[in-house]
Structures are given as structure tokens and as C-alpha cells.
Image (cartoon, rainbow, N blue to C red; front, side):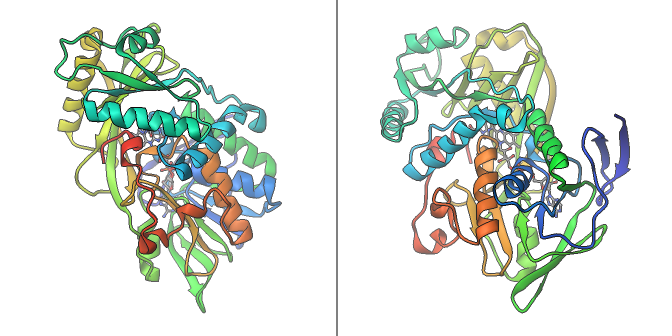
Length: 412
Ligand code: FAD
Ligand code: PYC
């Protein structure tokens, strides 16, 4: 098992672990998936395992999981407000619960629970409403008082000294974190076994059509013929669809996170705070993992503004005074694509053979297995899975929006 350095289409260095095959592209495939993040890999996996389609290329402009997949903070939960979302994210959570068995690889899914703190009376009302809605949807959820919060996570300051004291929290015990890079490797290794080609350093530069249907893709490594293209290119979907006259309701924004140096286990769960605005967990290795909201401007660069980092550190210290002595080890950013209702799009398009999976914004990691499974269904059958029907493009024309800005729990 060796490693290699090569050059991606945009000149970025590529470090690819040879545990999987980064294949040479063939001249044609039954299906092409654009993007080797979690969603693209999972879509290829379900196309192969549930729909018998194995002649697939997953094309990646950079390297395996070099996008948001290995830049996210790995929080997995299903405590969304609305029925369509609870159904989608709960389906994902159930797939997470059996992922290691399905893929035969470790992904370190750790159901350590998530707390969404409330600091104002309105947040208390919204949180209690969400707990009740979750229970009606079959999602595990309860409302905790400040003492209950301290019991679950003793390092949170629940005193009334805070600028915004903790008034309570929603609690989902089955939520947790996984190790995101292991998830990508697990899918990649299974795809290798299934005979799917994963091609790194291969940027799709255009989608070719004739008579209103897809005929292939232009790439930095030559033309590839196919009559089915699935876009799982978070943050860059519209770049590929706009030349076809297909404008999508998406905005791309940088989203940052950071980790501290390593500590012994001190933080047993995941804590998210909308009002003070930071979310914190402790990684398997021991780093404190902190994130906050998106940068306010649109952009495609995988870096963000310093003031966001400053504010999230201030918020963290406010809620977790014992973290004041921690040092920042590393900061980074990804590029997330956001829809007007903070919910994703999984659909076919007016171009025959072109399918989109996008708009997951700040919350698509938790959806990875479900997003892949539902997207594969759409690609293989040409019609939506029952769970993804509400996530069609036409909701932006009909007005049947799925507004999850609150339960997205990260400022947009
Ligand atoms: P990506 O990994 O971004 O995959 C898309 C891939 O497409 C990339 O590898 C990219 O290089 C490739 N690509 C793009 N254009 C082309 C092209 N033209 N040709 C070929 N390849 C192309 N979600 C949660 O649920 N929980 C969290 O805790 C969480 N935290 C986050 C923290 C941060 C800092 C960030 C940035 C995101 C976070 N998210 C979280 C969101 C989540 O990471 C994304 O919604 C999700 O990863 C998107 O799906 P993906 O994994 O397929 O995306
Ligand atoms: O969707 O839970 C989430 C999340 C946490 C951090 C970023 N997104």
C-alpha cells in the first residue's frame, strides 16, 4: 500500500491512499457520478448493490473526500422539525446504525447524543415544539432542564452568570458523530470490490447533450460517454448546470471549523447553541471540534473569514469556561450550497439523464447514506423515492418549501 502525489485539474496536490483504486477512465459508462464526497460514493454504492448497475465511474476533480466530506464536523442527528425532514434524516440515522455491517468496515459511529441549547424564551418554545414533533415522527427526543443538561454534559456552564443563560435543551440520545474519513474510505473500498471506477484528479468541465438528453461528460482527462449523469458536487452544482440553461436555487458559501490540541475525554456528547452560536464535540482522537455559521458572502474558496473564528471561540469559552486554556490546532473551511429553505434537492432535471443531489448546506454529512440511497433510486428508476419526493426542484415554483432554518441549527 503506497501513496502518490499527482496534480488535479486545478493544480492542487493530490495525495491518494492506494487502499482503493484510482482508475483510468474508460471511454464510456452506464452511469457517471460527479463528485467523490460521501454522497457521490454512497450513490454509486447503492446503484451497484440495490439496482445492479456496476458500470459506473465516480469522477473527482481533487481527491477522495477532499471536499466537504472530510472537512465537516461529523455530527449525525435526525431531530428536524418537519415530517419530510424527520423521515429523511431518521432513515439516514437508521442506515448509520447498520453501516459498519453493511460496508464491512469501521466508521466509528458513536451515539453519544446531541444537545441543542435554548437561551431565550422563544428558543425554549421552538425546542419544546421540535421535541413534540420529533416524538410524533418516531424520532427519539426529550426536553431537558438546565440541571438535566449539566447531567448529560458537565462541562457546559448552566449557571445564571452567562450573558445568555442555558434555559434548557432538546436532547437526542441516538445522535452522535462518526469518523468522516473512515466513512469515505469504507465506501471507496466497497466500490473497488464492486468493480466501480473511482477516478481522482478528473474534473468534469461540461455536460454534453444532444436532443435534450445527456450523451456524455467533458473532463480534464478526456470525454466520457454516458446517458446518465448524477451530480453530487456539493458547492459547485450550478457551475455545471448553468451552461445547460438550468439555473438552480443555490448559493455557495464557505463554512469553517477548527480543532484544539488533543485532550483526555472531557466532553461526552455534542452541544449546539444557536443563540451564542457555536457547536462543540470532542473527536475520537481527543481534539475539541468547534464550528459556527457560514461566512456571509458567496464564494468557492475553501477558506473563510477570521472574524467567524474569533466569534466561535468567544462563544465556546462563554459556554465552556474550562476550554479557555485550550489552544487552536487547525482551522479550515469547506464550501456548502444553500437553498432558500435550507433543505436539499434530490431530483431528475428537465435534461433527460441528468440528476441532481445538492443544496445540503451545512447538514449533509448526517444524510450521507440516505442521500446516496435516494439519489441512486432516482437515477436508476427515473422517479423519486417516496422519501425524496418532497425534495423535488418544483417546490421552489409550487411554494411547498421545507423550511428547516431552525433545525439546521447552524446560521445561514
Ligand atoms: P463533498 O465532500 O463536498 O463532495 C463533492 C465533491 O465533488 C468534492 O469532492 C468536489 O471536489 C467534487 N467536485 C466538485 N465539482 C466537481 C467537478 N466539476 N468534477 C469532479 N468533481 C467535482 N453536515 C452534517 O450533517 N454534520 C456536520 O457536523 C457538518 N459539519 C460541517 C462542517 C463544515 C466545516 C463543513 C464545510 C460542512 C459540514 N457539514 C456537516 C455539511 C456536509 O459536510 C455536506 O453537506 C456534505 O459533505 C455534502 O455532501 P458530500 O459529502 O458529497 O460533499
Ligand atoms: O447539521 O448538525 C448539523 C451540523 C452541525 C454542524 C454543522 N452542521
